[in-house]
Every structure is written in structure tokens, then in C-alpha cells.
Image 1 (cartoon, rainbow, N blue to C red):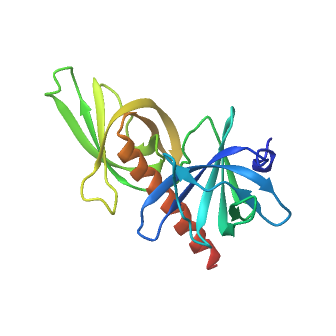
Image 2 (cartoon, rainbow, N blue to C red):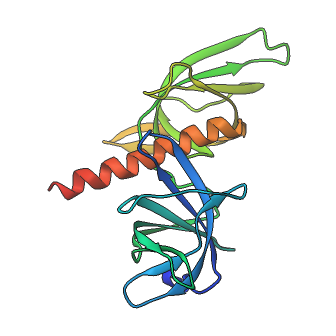
Length: 223
């Protein structure tokens, strides 16, 4: 199986994500300028031709998208290089993850979701129930319940985030509901993808997943 280091080479294009000191999420573009013995030199991270000034020590995720899937790993900003080949020095990546054919990393985060099941095309008859996500990403989520999701015309969901007053409202695409056994009890695992969601709401979900990864790494460091 390929490794993220197979793709870290000069001129390789990648994405970089981080959360700044004001708790804002950023996803930037960059490319590898040189791979040295003790660091990687990258071009100044930018978005829409606007360069971002990342502080020394900033923890970042670097993301390499390939034909078979996406590699994501953790790195840290070391310092700026200001000589003839200027750029940003970052550490060699660690905690690499590979996801097949997924654009976003999925994390085992439990969030409250209100599921609205419309029963016919009038959108007047509906059933509403609450679930907790078993895992979630910027493109969908899964949940466990006692019954499958069925007998509907359309499905919408309201996803509640701890730091947002209003929920994220999406139109859902039901991928599957399949029987699973948990603690010797028969339940259903239901997978949902987002058929309609705004770019701002995707950014909120990606930020939530990224914060979960950071918090989880911090907890593991304390053990």
C-alpha cells in the first residue's frame, strides 16, 4: 500500500488545514519546494492568492489527494526560510491516515441530529426523530438505531454543533440501513451522505472534525 511519503516530493501539490488562535478554521493550498534531511520546505500557504502567515509551532494537517484516496497527516510549522529559496519549513509528517475515495476524514464523534422524514411529495406529512452520530465527516455520517430508515419521500437533517447557536440543515441521501449486532442486540447501522449542503456548513463540520482530532491527540499525549 502506498505511503504518504511516496507523494512528498518537489512540486507536489497539497492542502494544509489548521485552526488559528481565534478558533477559525482554514484550508489552504501549497506545494513542496524541497525535501531536506530534517524538514520539508513548502511554498507560502495561500487561499485565493492571499498568503497566510502561520506562527512557528502551529500544528497543521497536510492533505495529499490521489486517484485512490486521500492521505492526511499531522505536521508542525518550524520557521520561515528567507534566503534565495524562501518558504515555510515544516516537520516531517506523522499520524498518517488514508481514506479510500473520501474527500473528508471521518471521526467517531457523537453529535445530536434531528432527522426529518417527509412521507410524500407535498412535504406536509412528516415524522421527526433524534439520533446521535456514530461517526461524521464533511460529507456524511452514520448512526445506530433500532429500526432502518425507510418509507420516506425525502429526508432532511439538522445537525447540532456545540459552538453554534443554529443547527446545520442539510438534505440527506440515504446510502443504506443494514443489520448489525452490538452487545448481542440486533440494531441497524444507517449511512447518510449530504445531498445538499452549503460551503460554509461544510467548513463548520470539517472544523469540528479537525478539533476532535487535535483534542484526541492532546488527550493521548497526557497518558
